[in-house]
Length: 272
Ligand SMILES: Cc1cc2nc3c(=O)[nH]c(=O)nc-3n(C[C@H](O)[C@H](O)[C@H](O)COP(=O)(O)OP(=O)(O)OC[C@H]3O[C@@H](n4cnc5c(N)ncnc54)[C@H](O)[C@@H]3O)c2cc1C
Ligand code: FES
Image (tube, rainbow, N blue to C red; front, side):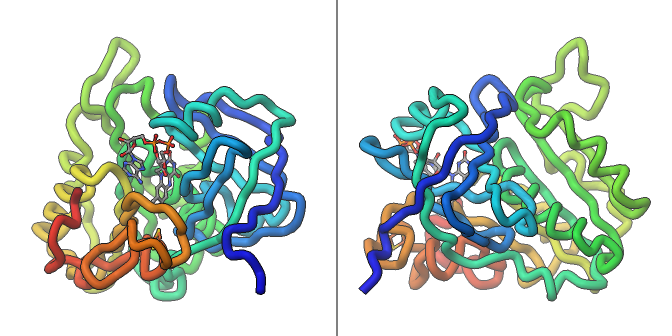
């Protein structure tokens, strides 16, 4: 029987400092490990431990994986101290992906907060692979300050991909360099000009941001079933065995992390 916790070695090829506490690691796994946007993997620091992260790269790039990782605790702090050439372990992919087929011909609104833009970057790359299949792609991204914006160097190139892509950012607190909106991400969920009968919204960010973004989307007329949430609950095994990630009757690692709001809205403590 194969060991579900076995990982494959992956070399750290590149490290980009995105913000003072977020880095993007490009890994080259020893053997191919595919994924679909929205799914997650467990990354192991040998001898230290492992933690779940969602690849932020294009799923079409088969020999490399990007992970955009915020330094939060034990494993992530050690990851942040790693250098190019270091070896980590990767296992997965696990869980549900964004259902790209259901998004075809639709207007797609992507709402991200902080490091929550990581899985949404993988989603964007997946949409860009067949950009003509989607009627509109709108990204609304909020971060705490201009220094906390991730993917700064590439966001402009996303806009340039096609005329029907629109990207707007906001920060909670601006500085002298910032000319854009100031306010939490819900403040830029306006003038969307979307056809609510033909639109989907995908949200990822800290729980409090997901909660208020969801309520705003409902106010704007989105149906529960058209709001896709990435529920990043505390996880351990990643394979539906330990029960750490329970959301009511579901295991976030197996039945999620991508859920539509109608599936979980009646369950207790979903925003914690
Ligand atoms: C499916 C999934 C995908 C994720 N994708 C990413 C990603 O792409 N990039 C990224 O930076 N992070 C992501 N996370 C969060 C990441 O897994 C945690 O930050 C990480 O486990 C912290 O590990 P640690 O050992 O460094 O911290 P620990 O020492 O374990 O904990 C540090 C603190 O963070 C809290 N914490 C741990 N895990 C979580 C969690 N899942 N949600 C909220 N708080 C948590 C702990 O309670 C503690 O307070 C994801 C989580 C899940 C479940
Ligand atoms: S993380 Fe163990 S059951 Fe989900």
